[in-house]
Length: 583
Image (tube, rainbow, N blue to C red; front, side, top):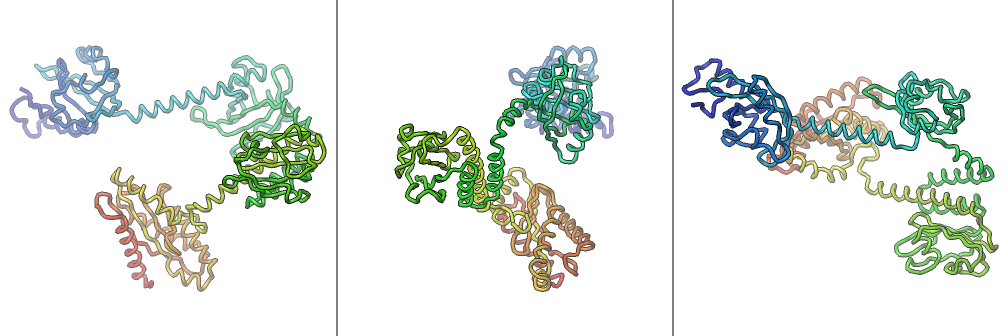
């Protein structure tokens, strides 16, 4: 009778040092889950520790389970008949299928079944390797390839992939259609075969531009198969194909666009002034500056003598800027609940233009004499209104240019508001670029929860710049600032990307070492070595900059508050300073 708790025993005791004992030791030490299985019944006779870890079942529950059915759910079965046939022939079998652990979670298992000579029993060994990560990566890779191929094939632009010598190695269907080639004919051609000689300056220019800047953008004339020229815009960039570097070119037919641009030659002056206004708006730092710049640009570009700009403030549209020629009483604040041309424009986000008063009865001007006007939205944040004492004073071109200008205005105001918000919520110290204490206070609770979840300690290094007051007193605060910046840079270089460097106080820094195993002292030594090396080359001040560092770590299983670890690190830091004779 076989002992179910042993991998090899067949009654009686196994002699020490015997083959069976060595086999049992090897069986138990295997990193993969391993089972001795009765071939006819499929019942598990013995298993190793790795099988307990893999399935979540204790060894006592695994013994006696059917290895072919008890771990599978509907739809996850394997071809047991084929496996049995190979075993009967004395051959091994390898297959993969999904299994379920005791807690119900599913994993992919690669199984190697080996016949085992043990008369009179028919026994085989089943070695099970968890391949879940590999399967998931393969699936993600396949999905990524499918998405890439779908985009590559369906995009309306022509796409070319070149090797580094300029030979076309792949194209999408639209490239063949655009250039008049049959499928596959473009592959193998050199780049110069599709570029007009006047625009071909050698493939190395294209390659060098991408290598130096990471991108290429140009307009050119290409040639179809029959010699017909194509006005194109080319966007190039690096591309990896089958593990090798290549260059990608996305080519767009811009013939109609160029025709439209040529048709706008008459409006060249306005476009130039509009670009200048856009640049000016990009440099505006306040909403008031952006509003004033918009009104000024409207007067210069479009020669609007009477205009005003209103922005939403709470439940009202408030006048923020007007042309100098517009009387103050001509533009007044209005509530959003009122029904007038301004509120309609804001609500619909559509420009309204009228050549005579009767065409826009909701306009209701505040003074007589206005005959025509434009009311245009500034995104969803305001309204720009233009008035004239002449009928039919505004053209379609005026409306188009005004909408372009207001698009820049909306972007400028949105940027200004975002910048103000970012400044208010800044998480980094403006001097050193490392995180500030506010950011540390925000993220530490999240990191503590992560530490508890994965049972990873968090290391803390409290770091103080020695003699910093002396540095400021002797060499000035600017020199002190440069020292702080250099220290911050050194700390960032010495730590991993996942770790945090915090400016904790004036000349104190805190390094937070996430997911460590209590390696704070090793990191501390690395930082001190880096400081020593830096002092050999630094010319910040005429004496070495040194750091006092206190190391501690917080163990999620200790039950202690994180403040205790911070206090310990702080105490260690001051102890280090005292050892160096620092106050």
